[in-house]
Image (cartoon, rainbow over all chains, first blue to last red; front, side, top):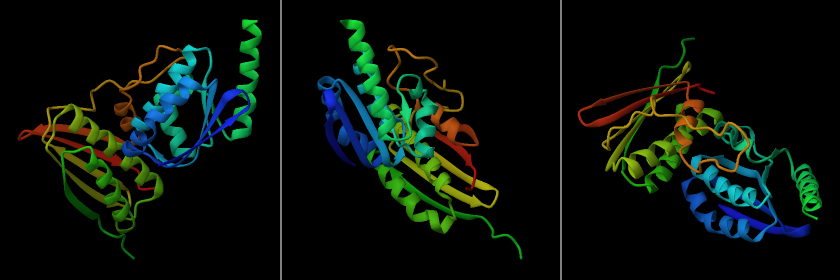
Length: 122
Length: 138
């Protein structure tokens, strides 16, 4: 599975995945997801080019989401197709991570929450 | 004109995680022959991936046989493996039910199989796990 990472404002990692998020796909990106969760303020994972996901793919997302949530931040997902969305909701991942239709709505929400969080800290 | 009869195929796979990938490719090749819709192919592949993980990682299976029977009314998939006894029809279906940072990272496969299949039935016979899953044909 191909994985492209760009940094948006404020060290928000924008991750675009392309391919099948199956056993092999999850193994290919696992370590990079861990590194990004440790080094980013937040993560936006674009699944619009992901045609398939099963529980190991969700596990990869959950591992990074947990690291970020514990730091008071978040991982959000955007662009999931109908079946991928059904898998994410089937595990209840939507309870701990926002699911958005596109990158624009995802980045807007993440920026608002980060601003709110930094306001609370100061 | 009468409806087409059942279309079937079957194949043996080794008890390895890599075989799950081979099974996905095999299903993809059979999809047009069997007349599987995109949703049925997605659901079958999702369940097969979970079954290989259970059978190989947790059950120590050395082999698995997958049989598919497609009819206009639905698709039946039988997964037979020689791993430790495991009945996914009675295993707990884990799901995160509220916002929390203390969620479990694994254990969601059984719930996904239940969600993506129409029906699952299990029996253990002659030292083999025999799981039959039914899917919508679409």
